[in-house]
Image 1 (tube, rainbow, N blue to C red):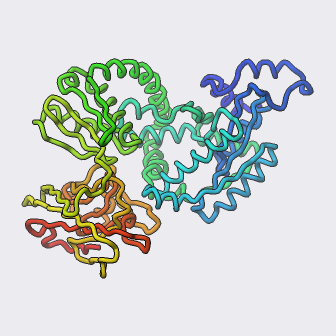
Image 2 (tube, helix red, strand yellow; image 1 turned 60 degrees about the vertical axis):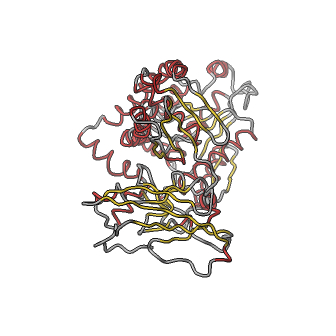
Image 3 (cartoon, one colour; image 1 turned 30 degrees about the horizontal axis):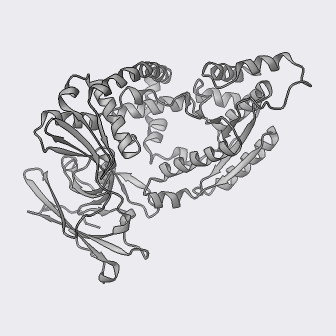
Length: 496
């Protein structure tokens, strides 16, 4: 075995990814006595895209399976996105055959899933990829799914979460073992992987989307982290050490979180909508770092995911403890938090879309010199009743069936995105405002209509592609906003 392969083996042993006793046994027996696989060995599904990282991971695991006797399978997921996807599938199939590892090619339609679920293409592809990998893991009776994230990926993850304002939990980065997913390459740098492949004379394919700066992670990978390394060559190692330390700290913290949760006097309800409440007085006695972590956990439990939530949202909810009863704030994922006498209530807006025909809501926004009050009215009509789709700046028509939560008139929140491409891909709302030449001091108070955490309409600027009327539309929601005075006076922007 090469030094690189030995380094991965030692890391996998430390993280409990390999059966030590089986490895010792197989080392002592002759090649003739060594079983091809063991019924007691933990089988591994390795996700191979054909890129350098996954090719290196497959080569290392194919060496280790001879020593430890675990069943090994390759699964390649064809996402139906890139033109080069067929090339990647063929390359992976050929490589697996050369290494003597069974290979399965699975095809999914990530763009269709993204459109159906109103998710970004990247998010939809990831969800479908792990769904397929878990299906194959169960079908092949394996224990692990091995993915090829390495130390540079870990540094990018920690840095990205820090920039978003994460807590200790987020600072852990990607876990070496997370449920059934293992990451054997987290102990090595990308340069080590490239050197290993060069020594092996191994080929791999390159995904051209890795060089696109459309996504935040790629900007960090291609520009921010390399620039930081110029001034501080040890930054990647330190970010990885920070992740490791945070994993240990959070392990101890979880025990204290359980005790803090008991003190909060938590109450959970399911009907008529998911709801969690806690005592204001009790919460005042809980250290902020624990309270914020508990709140983030509540957000994730109610909405189904923590990814859209950060420390700023937890701080906003905690701030309600100093407000009078009746005060409320909107959160991503269709959640609302409100002060009700001696308790804070966090609840999912009832997914009834619009509860009555003449639904009304209002907000107040601040301009450069004035304050404006906006009123939103929603009327539901049959598609047959609409002879022409409105092109007015203050009236828009959307497909009522696309609404997943409740429509909300509000101002922008961190993480808001707007679907600006026909295939459902989104752009950060802040970036959209920049491209639309909206003054920086006006962006934070610009009125938007949201469906949970998704932006339906940046009023006066753009309607989300995900909510537009199609041939399948049966009911139409007519959105009308009424500002008390022209918010757009002097603006050259043109509504869509």
